[in-house]
Length: 190
Image (cartoon, rainbow, N blue to C red):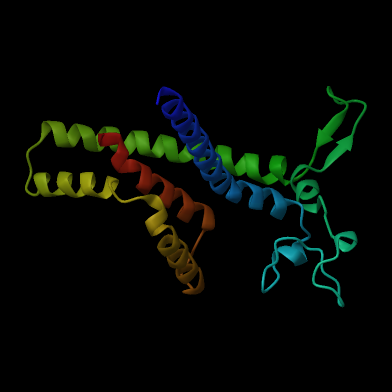
């Protein structure tokens, strides 16, 4: 009886481990897809209908010898060039330095400063003064923090596109900065 119970316990461990491995593989699938996509050519990424592996030819649906793998995306972002005068012996001249780092520093710094200044001023006003609608406004701000950003992201993008096409003066950086600041603003009350 004890031997049978021990075997059942051992089998249950194997079943649990197999289930956990299966769950981990399913959870790793998006990461695998992102890695595979990063090595595709731009034309293969934009294909309709999409294919997981770009290994097709005009005569075959899948030919391992015809796979088209590329590092053009990495080259465009990093663009590492040898430079004997540089400290590390190479320079990174891709868009990660010339565009992405600059934009990140600009948006992060500006929106952080704007949020701190506005939330400090509004926090002072909420704590010191009684005014009509104070409770409703505070409730609305707290309720707004419960809405995940991803639920309104598409709406913000469409609003930006509509404003850009409207003919009104529109600046992408100011729009992005205002969206980032407005979204971060209520969190200052938490």
